[in-house]
Image 1 (cartoon, helix red, strand yellow):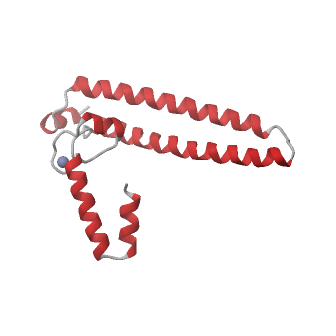
Image 2: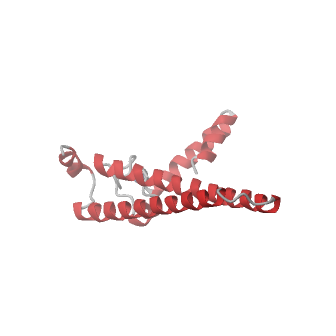
Image 3: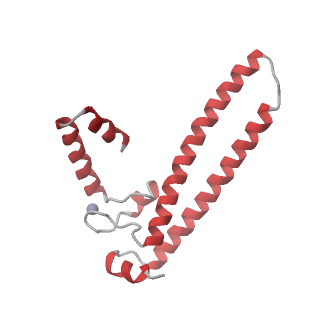
Length: 146
Ligand SMILES: [Zn+2]
């Protein structure tokens, strides 16, 4: 792909490091998809049982628990997909602000991270001060970003 020429001037990650990380991401994605599949199967089996009222409330609780797990895994899937598309475009692991490498342990926690820690902190501070100055919507956005 043509992006490879670009990425050589930008990041300091070696291709083998990126390849390794890409494999990890694909593996994790597969695990998550399998997990989601299991949840769905379990859900169908559950719904096929009529059950009395007591069972119903248990069902609701189970459903809610599954929903929150589902939300969590789809959130993680989103991170992974974002990271994979950044790998494709050659931007992966590079801070958007200072163009330094984002530390690997940060990338493992948040593969879609686009800022290194110091730039992230800086932008959070900037957001917090703009939220103080500005309207309520600014505050809401900065909460959402965390
Ligand atoms: Zn940075």
